[in-house]
Image (cartoon, rainbow, N blue to C red; front, side, top):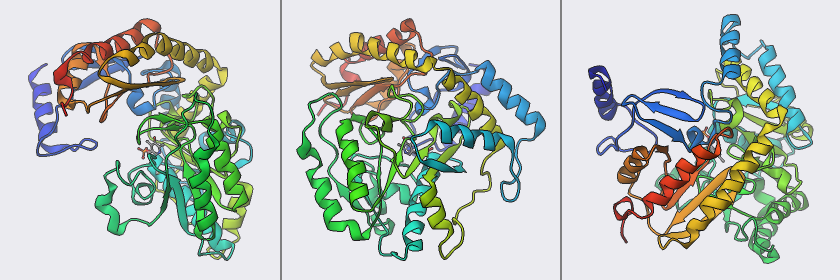
Length: 434
Ligand SMILES: *Cc1c(COP(=O)(O)O)cnc(C)c1O
């Protein structure tokens, strides 16, 4: 690294917050100089195979010619205009595509800037909906434990109350309701008793419930757990039976990651509201969307406020929409299905066998998601450095070491990631002894 780069890193350490990090005891960050395909190149010269898709958002790889082109072309027309009173084709095209590809009935599109905001919007929609129906007492949200829905206040109020460390904010959070997390895993035999407690909570609380929110099939940042499609089906049935809106948070699962375009398709259900984010621009820029049914939209619009009470400054940013359209055009060509099937097959051949390792508690695989749950927490500083030395960009949390690579990864590159996990499992200093 040159002097400037060394100085930059030092400044970063002293002044720049990173996600969930300490400013007193910062863990090292690695300076990136470029990224291309599935490779991230560091200023130090090391080239890493990306196993994280930049928090699950990159689909077609970095520095993609079609996405670059869409971004440059739109920037030469206009990069942004306000969305109040003005509109533009990038946003209109995106809305059309989203209505076409998402589960049936989701016909109204609200664009926003990040996943957490898409969740805020969904929760506000459901509260306004019941207000318009003259049932303001229906304002609580039901969810399941082990969920993750974002870091803003309302989103935090539906995250797992224990592992999200959100009890810190407990006095100011919305008081929502938590059912046990789904127990039957994706490929186990369905056990109908799994939904009993959830059903009991619907029965007891439906008169105060505005909505039920869940991550379909895969609980992501709350534990990387894959649960049974019958559970999701039961959720839909309970929402209908008890007149509670169903919000599907597909911010992590949407656009192919689980092997279906949307994870809701595993259970063949449509929610009343869906949240999309992370993957929407193929990992290029920040953009999110909340879609709802005509009934939800018109009920809100005919209520006391006469409109939906939300409107971000950068709503429908044209650059982000243009890139999203280019990314969705690649998705529509359909190669993602083969790409995910190929990744899943290699996970089953090479990652699944790690289950026999003494340090491993569980291995879970679904589509382009491969998870190794260790018996002990990792030592982040040590394990991160080891992964970098092994040419892999993998960022575990807690006991979970997982891979969610860009769809375009090849088998050789995926082997680099899997072999790196295999290697660190034998290294005691990568784990915190109990
Ligand atoms: C990441 C994530 C969010 C939050 O999105 P941000 O863009 O980080 O605000 C919400 N829900 C799920 C399921 C996520 O994975």
